[in-house]
Length: 187
Picture (cartoon, helix red, strand yellow):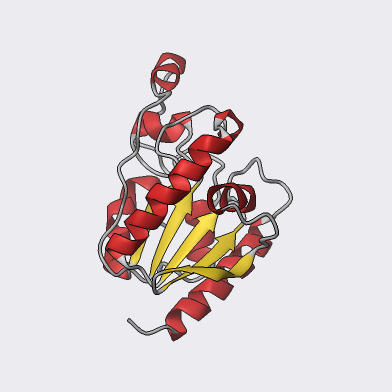
């Protein structure tokens, strides 16, 4: 994955608290939802931009895209019925910096966004974030019983390179399950 530029340490520090614009449109097939932007993503202004984040390679390996996209190609996603948002908008060095209150408030804001945009699926990328944002302590990876309006909820592992529990092949398999299910849904 080619990055047009690499942010400096000062640019990374200045990115704290900034936002990365959503990549959204009405009635998407799948709206992917990260926890919150990292400093690298906020500094460059694109989702899942940090080298080592596996979102883009896994999106391709699971069949959601027909070629390997980079964060700088993210605006192409809605053409394929895909989008990206976050539970919490503000960038932090680590998701551990988010409070329970921020995650719950983010869950409420996310639910309102989903009601407005009406995607077929909302895929939250991070089990802990999903549990905190939607107060579902017993949730597990995969399809959820909870819906937001007609939108089905799905939980996938966080694709961060720091999430060593899930290797790329397993991430691709789990993302593929959602892709297959989303292909069965009707608008």
